[in-house]
Length: 455
Ligand SMILES: Cc1cc2nc3c(=O)[nH]c(=O)nc-3n(C[C@H](O)[C@H](O)[C@H](O)COP(=O)(O)O)c2cc1C
Image 1 (cartoon, protein in one colour):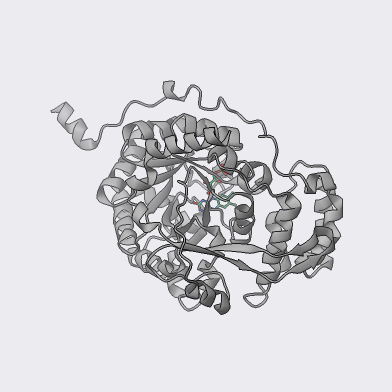
Image 2 (image 1 turned 30 degrees about the horizontal axis):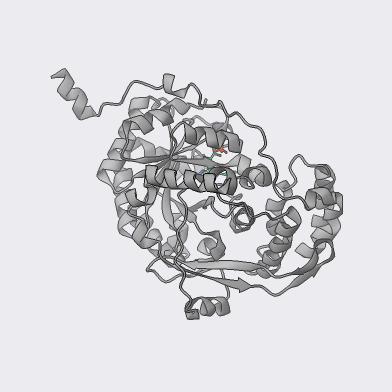
């Protein structure tokens, strides 16, 4: 079976030449080494736990990692060089403010080795104004590679400066947010999705960002804004940004944004999904790469999007609200590699070591509650989930350590759930894109081509 998967990977690598197209290969040599936190005992999790973390150093900039000085010293002193290549971003976890923080990403990486992880959006101004305090906003545990930093902003100088400051943290890609409809961002801040109305500005911003880093850059956008929602307007945006800047990868949230006062959450459910726009872009911009996003809720649907031609698939809410059943299948079903084979008990044991090592790192933060938050969805739809959540509510009041939180709550979950690795692929809409190629909008013609045809 693995032979078959390997063939599939080889074929897809040859087919898409993702990294080669993006001029990635020469930059990917790096090294990795294993580091262990001290063992922490926890009755409910039984064994001693040593938590090996893979540290990888990836580009020519010096790395500042989510680590103590001792860890940094080990990183730089270690001579063992192992070259390491990441698989392409066929699957990524969306940037989500207050959700895809360091803690969630640590959990996600324990479940999937290959998923690309996006940070929450960090405003360029925050990075620039907090330049003496950057670890708080940009540091991450090195096992989180491949990881993309999403930045937001509308001041080109600050976007460039923020990118430059972020270089020290060795992100694998810098992404510009052109999709956030929040009034704080798109209204007063005048960035996020409002930027889609000014493609020349986005191109200028992307050129400045690209000039400040040696990793690839990308844009995450919507399919439109308010009544600027025709396929041609979307194509104009993509055309201008890609031809006037080095941006060759776009993440397309397949709903337009409405800036008429509906909330960001409503903006993720009210405007209809138009996947046909996404697949139209694949047809009309064959030299670019596109990741589809919006409304994809199962691994079956991820597979279906890729089979219909998507270069990459980004999943947001489903990867947060059901991490085990989504991320647990990514390595095997999407990447054709063996999955970690870990059970949830083993994941929790490793997460505990992480949690204890970071608690209170920045004064009172992160708190036990911050650290435990991403775990609350780990038993989605499993027996004992309701009781675990009720016990968690009580434990937030009574417990001050992650270990005591586990002691108090995990009794709610049957051993059979805690001790089984990821098993069957959960059902999903495998036929979601079956008819998509019959629904595509008419092919895009650039403004210049249209003029020639009319002349
Ligand atoms: C809580 C939350 C916060 C989000 N924050 C961001 C963000 O910081 N940047 C961004 O580009 N999109 C953000 N999004 C949008 C997601 O990245 C994604 O585009 C959207 O949820 C649609 O994907 P989904 O249907 O798979 O969830 C956020 C979504 C949620 C639910």
